[in-house]
Length: 199
Image 1 (cartoon, helix red, strand yellow):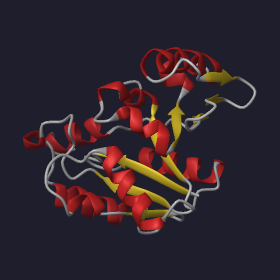
Image 2 (cartoon, helix red, strand yellow):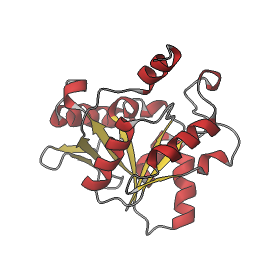
Image 3 (cartoon, one colour):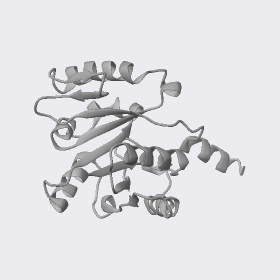
């Protein structure tokens, strides 16, 4: 069981590490691959730190973290880093026996229907959606009901949320899990702001 935790990570911080570790423990994922996006498709690359520097920051931040391994697999290809293509490459590498689990925050997951080939994601990988109830003002049940509705409109109306397991399940497609994680008062944008102010 392998976790896939991708992102821009500009910069990576303790909140990212804590969330990835909590997901790894909750779902018995080992390793959890931290995958910095070389060229994020939804961000202006001229306004973010270089891909090489973000990769090195991720390596330094995870050096002493159990379960976490940094992957540079998105750095060996040209063009935008699409999640579905990254997962397909990992499947080719490890075969069908490897159980892949995409770890993603609620805010990012809400926008999945803007992603490249998003329908294919639900065919090839389970998804673990991270929520912080005190931050998003949503309980796991409320988040599950909301996402069930969104999945029904955009992917398949056969997705059903089970409050007892906090899973949104489908008879053929992969399961979407909801996991409550610890909120830390930190963000990449805040770190960049403080760095710009030399604080």
